[in-house]
Length: 118
Image 1 (cartoon, rainbow, N blue to C red):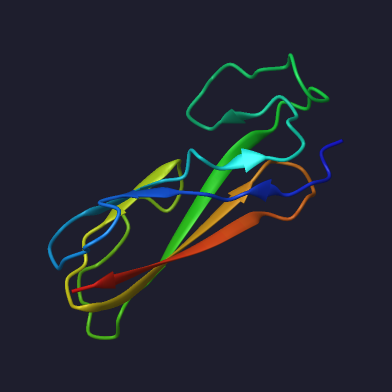
Image 2 (image 1 turned 120 degrees about the vertical axis):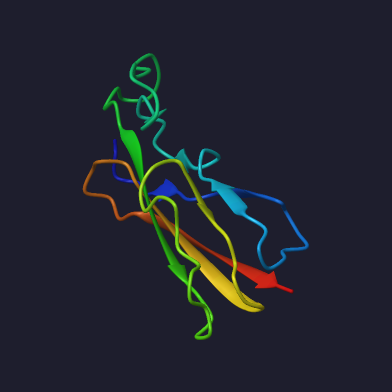
């Protein structure tokens, strides 16, 4: 119970056709926990202890962004929390890394998302 890593998943808005100057919002709430140990997101205050083994595992999120070398202003609005946003400032590939932990000793789940900005 509680030994499986969480599964990192995310959705972005917009979902395609990324452009310089257009904010990209990424939401990690589709992430899940394979153990189903009373999972709740860090934005919820009441855990669900009715399923799984009742460990009340809270998912926590960490985000990092790798930007093209010419980028001067593209940064994340939040390095933690369920959602983050960045605005590309140059054409190129931006890589957003999501890391999801469940508060146990299980390794974090990770996902890399590449945005090809035109």
